[in-house]
Image (cartoon, rainbow, N blue to C red; front, side, top):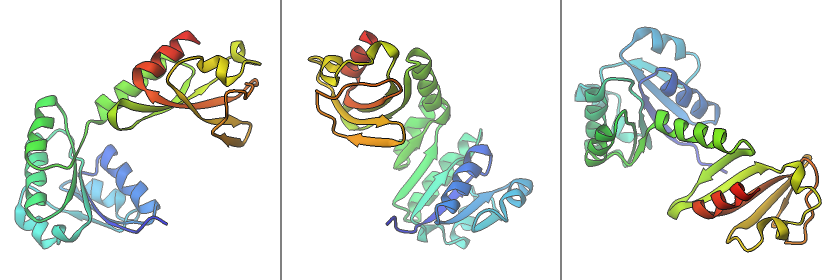
Length: 217
């Protein structure tokens, strides 16, 4: 069971508000902070706490006991300076986990130096994901893990029906992790598994190997 945590979300625009709502829905305690009264009012009844505060003022974060939270997400929109100041002050208050939204590559580097433990670049990350889906329309979803290892969920085409997973993968250094058939998931299918119409495959491997395999399909 996932342990309940206390989160601070600074910046309650579309991005920050979505994070705050979802964390609340998942059962966590969430403190949402923004300098815009309307944004705070919109979320007041949807998350644990929502307050108006200027996070560039260190005293504000001290008064809110920010140092006692488990994780902070700095999701401020276009105010680069405010993002940097909030990140620095949260780290100085003792927060071990500070996720911060970066707007540019330079901003990314500065946030790293200020101690942000995870840098979020939503526009870049979403752009990469959309371009991958456009380039590989059979790919439903993918997950990037460490060391360039990816897990890819893709829809089989009619050309692959009646082929075995062994024939599909051939000698590629890629593993078949799951076959999704109708509403059932079949983990670790062997190479004799025969593909049927509508099957979805979840494969794991290095990015270049997966890309080469998908290009051959």
